[in-house]
Length: 298
Image (cartoon, helix red, strand yellow):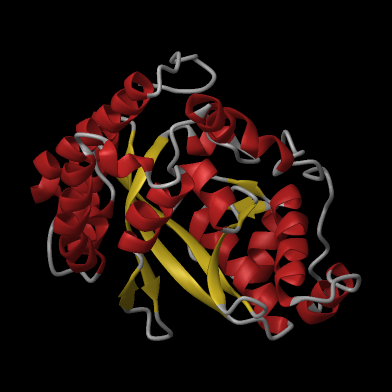
């Protein structure tokens, strides 16, 4: 019976969360010549009564009309991003935050480091950027990358909930199934998320663009384990996972602040990749699950 429950959590629970299979309105052109962002946003949320419902409505509108585009290191305004029809994760989050700010929804920006598919080319680019700009460009490298999203305040529960405009993800459960769990990445655009193995550091960015609250433990240890009903604590690699997340966190913060070169932690990052893979394998073996290609990648 336990295995049946875990199978349901592992493979089936996400089917009710996502009906989208892709961005549905990319062909729409957004005219920004006389755009009033607050008027547009109010029209999008007109049928919503709760703050969370409004946040979700804005997310669905944005994620289906703006495409994710690779970073080109240009600085753009909200209107320029809208007119371009998309942007990188920072730009998509920038537009979303401007929209919900215009209707007075509380939010806070998030900076993340995730384990990423191995790339010597990305490491080479990162090293060049570190020389040109400084240590803050070390937030991406051979097996890691940075990512931006935000949290919105659910005024009914008083909890901060994750929102990722790049992926059309809102709420802790959706976020975990898009980014952390052992099943397939459930997002509007898996071409982005399939390259992101798992986040390893999550920080709130304050109004002065400084990293403040560390949310790594909340998302990557507590919520992750809670999704699996506390079963992860029984896995042999769980203690290593929690210890390594806690150990890397201050170095990530220092890198974002330009005080440390995160490339010097390359061995620690590679170790985290292995630990996450070990967790997956142990979970499969313990619960006698088959590693289906569509369900688990090892």
